[in-house]
Image (cartoon, rainbow, N blue to C red; front, side, top):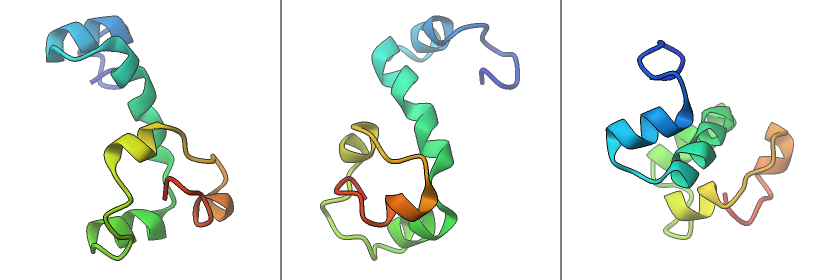
Length: 72
């Protein structure tokens, strides 16, 4: 929505979606998850410990480091 120009700022997006600005500002990092990690999460191969809250808590930027991350 930001990328498409529907909203000018994270605050605008949060207000439009009726969610917290802090939550919206943490979510873009999920776009940089390693493709194999995304596939494993969607297939249910990463277990119940992998939650949205855990992922929003911080995930390494480097794909190689994501596999060993406690959030993933």
